[in-house]
Length: 315
Image (cartoon, rainbow, N blue to C red; front, side):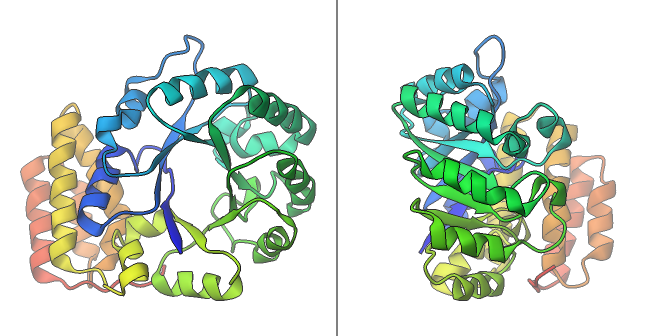
């Protein structure tokens, strides 16, 4: 099996990826949250920090581009290749309203003819290997048949499918019947992404799709950072390793982020996913959420680790 980490904007940056890799062992690929080409043709400071080779040592990292412009994709891909990246991922999955309204991410799926022309231009002008992360449509799963035909026309390295439409956002269950259609019809190597929140959820999906050996984990890794290790090695989440992961993440954020307020925002975002992994977590989660100073935050985290046990379960 091959296990990937999903690109979650604002969360799975290089600090998170490094801590995850060091504490819980390597995933097969780490996808870098999307780069959005701008008019000046330069990387933002966040984007540059994320793609620097020294920030991705020991990882097979794959940068992702969010655009509907051939020129922007080609120019950005060339710059990424100069940093040593040989695979680049196209984001056709982001369901955010601000992205979709500009015809990007999963919003691009509503314009299949334009998407076809875009891919034709991109593959004709880009030397790097190109993988695609996609939803199954914008408004209806019936859109996916046409999209699958389009993807099949090009030498796509890998097709990562999140079987929801854009309008689903992250509600409802992934549409496994549509993913099954892709398994039957696609000549492109497939990766499944969507609601793999636990080892048991992975096992159910693997049993349903025995022909698939590649899986991407997003929110599940925030709920249980040791999820890939558990699936590979049968080692459950333990407090000692989780504490080491937390402390590295917390310390490294303090080294790169401007001020305590920003650090606290990052850590609170993580705890909104992670806290339910502990028994009787509610009062501790409330203290963490209310903390406005680092010592107050640290005391709440120390008490949680000292006084509660891990109890990882599905949401």
